Image (cartoon, rainbow over all chains, first blue to last red; front, side, top):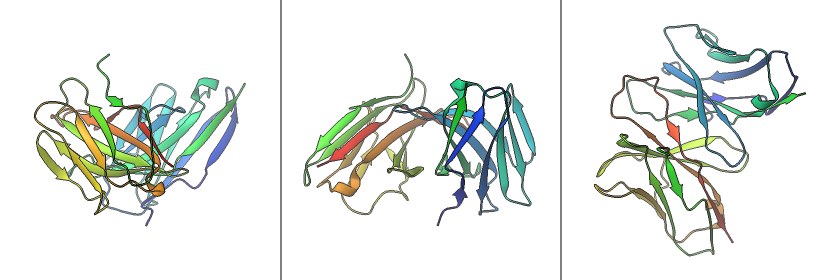
Length: 113
Length: 116
C-alpha cells in the first residue's frame, strides 16, 4: 500500500523555466511533509518542508504548496537550473510520532541547458 | 566532516553469507534511522534506534535482519544468510535529540549491498 505517491517518474524542463513536481498521499493523519533531493551515488539531502497548518512554504527558488483537501503537495522550482537535475523524493510523517518518514518513489528531474 | 558516515560504501556477498553495515551519526545526534532503497523504488523505513534502545523496528523483516546502536561505537545493521532480494542501497540517517528543528533527517551516502 503506497501511502505517498509520485506518479511522474521523470520530468524534463528547459533551464530558466519552472519545474513542478507533484506528490499525492492517502493518509489524512500525516501532518508534516518534506522534499529531499538525491544525486546519483549520494544520500538524500533535505530541501524544504511544510507543516499541515500551512499551505505554502518558500525558500529561495523552492516553494512547496500543500492542498490538504486534495491530499496533494507540489514542489515548484523557479527558475530551474542544470544543477537541479536530480531525483526528488517527497516524504510524509506524523510529528507526534517518530521520524518514520514514508517516501514516495521519486521523480527524476532533468533540466536542459 | 561531521556528516553521517556509513561504511562500507559497497559490499558484495554471496548467498548465505552475513552482511554488516555501519553508521556513525552526525556529532551531537543520538537518534539513528535505517532505510532501504530497492531498485526503482523509494526509500523504505526499517528501524529507528536511540543509544542502546530500539524505538521502532516495524519496517524490519521478521527474520535475518537485526540492528543495534550500542553505547559506544556506530550503529550496525546486520543481515544474516543474505539472499539476492537483499541487494539494495541501505541508508542511515540521524537526527538531534531535540525536536525543535525542521524535522529533517540527515542521511549518509548509503551502503550498496550486492548479493551474488
